[in-house]
Length: 178
Image (cartoon, rainbow, N blue to C red):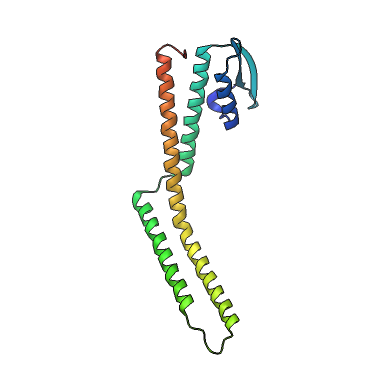
């Protein structure tokens, strides 16, 4: 049997284990062990509260480790000033785009230019302004998305750590009964 801490379970595997831990089939249940190949192997066992507790503990540790790994992969969290600057820049870009589009719409049609040609010219100009605006906004959107991802994963990490603490407390009180 492989060590649980060296592999992470897929969400489907976690859900399957959690569902089977809830079931009680005449005093026996199927549990899963992670094989060296990474697949789950069914094992018939007598219902054992300590085994369930250990299983929950290992899953919680895996959740904490995986969430920490993701946070580390994301890199440093943007500081508040950078996030505020990104929000400000996005609103400035939107404001500038609005002004540019207003100027395009209000620009007078030269007498020598055909009406359809003028509309096509305005549409091209508008599209160019929108594309330039989107290109400029990408950096700032990325900063805000990174901030949101850090916030979300930090909440997940906190929840996983709290779950782990509860499992430890339950183990200290005498095992996984109940």
